[in-house]
Image 1 (cartoon, each protein chain N blue to C red):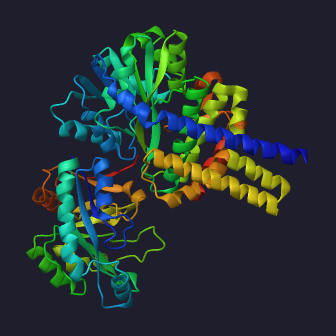
Image 2: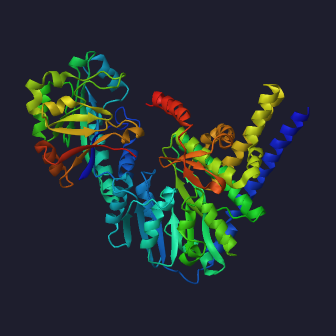
Image 3: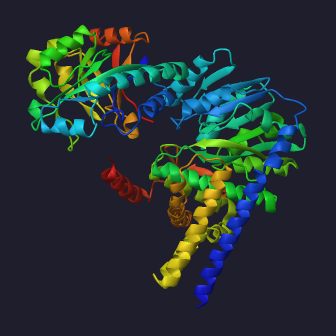
Length: 403
Length: 230
């Protein structure tokens, strides 16, 4: 009976938090706030160096890169940065550059092994190459509108602001992995970012878009200070806040295009992100389980068996979650078919199961490399000795299942 | 070098991706040249009848709409991605026996050619239209669900003179017999699903226009193949 009330209360708690998340998202995207934001014209438009680290073909890569070359902004440069000319993204970057011969677009290629974080390694050369005092680090899988730079630069008028990052929404899902990814980005990730920002005043930095001054980045030790950190975006934000500067989340929604992910890619990403949150948050990570009401309702079902009560409870919670996710999707103007929101509870169940993975294993595979993740997501080379039997079994299974 | 995939199917036959989306997939991935080569299936046996019945084939009736849609997409692809899209078909002569089955591409085709015609008649008509003739997956493939198409290879003495190039690699398979015979070669994905983007491709060292590409393949000078991976 005690367990009944514990799980019942956990699920209700999860639903309350979820509703608060929806309110927070609604508030962040409210037309009044947006209108006000657009009406405030920036006093100055500092020249910006947009740095795009590239590795491999992301979905919609050409369109993503192209969207940064057609910005309605007085003075900016775009730098595509790669480690290897044989990278398929290099050809796409070249085609984008050829399409806009009049735009200040550069492609820099250099193998760089300063640290273990491949994205930061990719940034070093572009950073050296950049000529303006304000930089925007932007991932290759995001697509923006022409007024993006004009919008996100506004908070930088205030010298107390050290970093501007953005809210993200997932678009373009055409396969099960990408549909799950977009549902998760548009509910759990966006909801939590807005919740933390609105109620707890904790700005959560997502590295898909980070606008900052070089002087501020240098003051916290430059890129070198995060070269071995997997969650480099989070720590750049933390260090900037440590310098008594503000981190602002712009309400400009950037599009994260995820079209053809398979389920494996979705699982890999969220196991990796879960491990990062576990290493950063410590015991707070356990709270995450309680804010997944579908999963806690499912645990309730597992504990008490498929009774009428437990099944109805899971169905009710799932319906609330589907309706909430649908409502969020409409608010975000996400072009997703309404029936696909029925997959939301299945995605939540999967995410609930993935929640346990970080507790069992501290290694990550990112961009083809395997690392061990220590405190604060500090990366080190993964010791193979003593673990090779494990990898051999995993690789053997993978080889058998390969199509 | 131009990154090319000259063997692509769409929902006009048995592909799972619509033409517009197919063009976007290759454009977004930085390709220079693609050929849309949907099946034209012979209707003189049960295979062909089924294919025609379930619209897994371009037919004489649908050919005009097919070509005009490709033309429209080709203009969009050129403007948006600098991607050259060439119209084509894959003549599909299926039989219950591998030895009697043959598939070949007619790239840069202008008029409809039925697959039920005899081989020589088709080849001559294709030559008349100045289409490039490429023998597809001409040897044993690794795909167990697929009936191999060995007719052209088994009858190469008779038909090789008509064929401009042979697929030396198709999706994940490589046919070393083509190099042993020193035949002109290209590679293609036989794209039916999005995942087939990552497969064997051709690299051509020539200008980005249909005539130069056909010339490059026919002379087989400046042709290379690459296994396109992400």
